[in-house]
Figure (cartoon, rainbow, N blue to C red):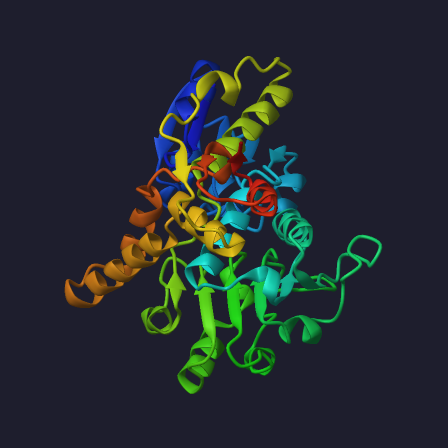
Length: 378
């Protein structure tokens, strides 16, 4: 059995190596010629899996180590009776921590702000539950849910009136509730003065040209973009206008990517009717250098912000993307190539639950809050 796998999928050899011949390739460069004699295809979101890629191949199973499936042509796969699997929720916690890090870097205490969430599925739903447990005032928009699911469900206009708006909707082009260009100039202008807008879902949910036009008119908005329209050929002028920009890595924590690998391994084992014999517990050792010092800070928000940015310095992601954009302008290195290289060589980022916190002065309230963020608090 030949298994073709995106080279950016961690532990691909360790999980799948004894199941057949492994071929690893850059996900965005996988071609029909590459897959024609493959039995299994395992990808991430950068590979478009459709008739153009698979027609004439012998692929019998497709797995994507991601939550999203908009890169899979499900109509084609189902019509060809090709089983497929994704990894729902695998990196939801990673994206939630990206939002925490962005707000910490902007010095925005979400418990003191009105927070709006657009899209409350795996990622947005987890963010909603975390924020609610931490006492934030919430407004949510998701036309696929009801108030029985989320009591704070309201209209899009109400969400756009919030101090912080965080977007986590998948890209849906057709159907009763399309998300493509959900936010255009008319919606974006509804954001209040000084609002924070975060998009860590799909780039095309916001009309990026309209966003750039608005940011050329208003300098009060604080925008954080992890996803762009289009990727990887992002708009450098738009990057120059946002406060934090990153190369679609919100869900790229090492833990999140490993979860995705394990989930697709389990799905492939089920497809092959063989019991799984490997797990992350057996393959990944615990983080050794995992002590974070809260210092002598006493204010709960100051402690939380300090620890979040110790665990995940989002400014470094922002700086690397801006350096890549600079190289594109000065050295004529195509931005799409630099964007993909940043994803390929992304540093190993561990989630908060891997870290233990030491204190000098901390109230029980502070410790409880840090625990809700995921840190190990003794």
